[in-house]
Length: 255
Picture 1 (cartoon, helix red, strand yellow):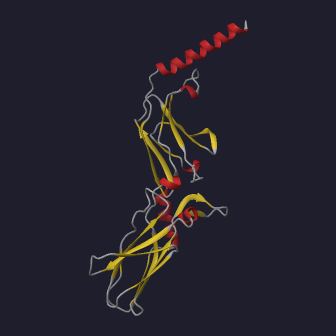
Picture 2 (cartoon, helix red, strand yellow; picture 1 turned 60 degrees about the vertical axis):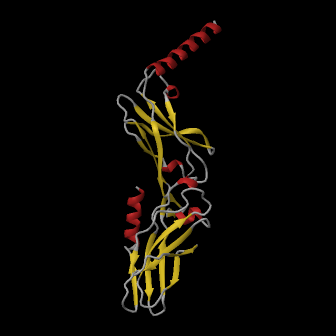
Picture 3 (tube, helix red, strand yellow; picture 1 turned 60 degrees about the horizontal axis):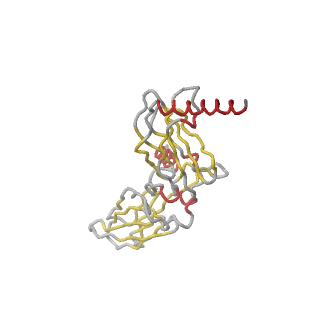
């Protein structure tokens, strides 16, 4: 009797399996990552018709797959919150599903996407120049940078910044030139302030990039906007939008 029951269960299982395969549900392709400042989005194709997608994420920290974007009629999924441990590598799977009580989720067709390591692969966005001071009398340009926030939070609920994540593996570089010249020089700093010596009577244009020296790829960030000082007068300063406005801008870029 037990043998008969086992054979029946096996037959049902095989029938369900073949039913899922026979339905010929399209699977995801062109699976790719877009990640800026640790805001990580997964995109794929094609658009679903009479089926939906669910995204599964797995890492060595949680052996079981974690489901995200359950049965969506879209081809994009924000998986940032599952990747807070930025130093590990994540696997991703996009499952094609239909609403069928006879078929379990494990039996639906799926496609595996490329693995992703946030610390090594997220793109570093444009650095934020908070303000600068151009002192012609002392022949000095001082540029102050504000660390870019990420989607993650500290214990006090404040946004965790890029510097807090990369720590000593994070450098700002100021690229500058005389306003009357195209010749470019640079100066790097491990702090948020960069000071360069200037020539009296000259105006200067400059921009900033951040870098993560330990990286082999995606080492250098996007460039900040180029700013230029005035060439007349004794001293000049520039203040970009207030901290509150910068937070809003950063929030918009992240979300």
